[in-house]
Length: 424
Ligand code: FRU
Image (cartoon, rainbow, N blue to C red):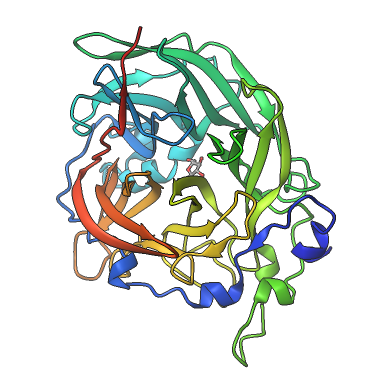
């Protein structure tokens, strides 16, 4: 197996590298890049379901969009099972943590609406049972296409396999609420190719998911970001000088970090509708650094490309670490080179006293960052926790050049629209 630079040598662009040296700069608990503590007495959006990844309705330029004054979000959602014998412990009490940890296997896409950009009202499932071709409906992006209310929902159809798909439907509003209609035909777009992006056959722990389509503000073409791993058999990747970066003496040992091979993938549409896609080499790789760069997305600001992606402590490689949260990189052009924000890449991490308080951060072009509550400790030692499965307080952030700063905190699940579309 080759190093990242050798592997993508002859391709149109070189992936930018998030290096081990960059990651060594990560500082947990820096107040400018740490999410304020989430209190254990948080409100729960809905006691019948867990929600996690939150996907605001937006246009192709990234603007969070309401329709006829209604804000709309999509969420990965799973039923809670407080009375299911399967989730009762020996004493007959509901083992909510086990139920929560099992949620990925039954994730479905739901939608919610609101007049105020918070206090979301339950909409329901986007697709009827049986419409999506696989067991799991994993993260993606709902795009409002026009003032007829047409919506392209890009998402990941998982188990068996992992396929980036889309389904077209329509958002309909009344005075009383919002409904999603016609999401009936799912179109498979592409899967990992084994050449640029790792396949399940190459690594049972591969990641290939979380499509985020967008129109490039500079060339006007339709592209899509997604999460991937760099192709190659598990264990065969090389962590060479480029992946290590400029480290101090004594930091050359890479341990088993060849097993961590995350990348941010990109594809370009061959047609205006986004039905036909060509995968391109990754924009960013993290070989030797981290195994997951999830839900990649952009903020286009000041003529720059701000690339954000979420990652975990547990997916870091030997010898490097950082909090669960959102990481970011900036470039002057779409294909890079990308430089880690704040030197390290860390943009908004959990405080070390509450390492799992939030996850799946989504940075919006207005600087607001939404996420969900995972679990919050309820005692000093952190052994007792309260499971979330609901919206976290929104954080306000300023993006300035190559730095970011936490500047505000808002209400739970506050996702205000940036523009409103009146439907015809
Ligand atoms: C992030 C994530 C996504 C995936 C989903 C699965 O929280 O891991 O990458 O689509 O959750 O539940």
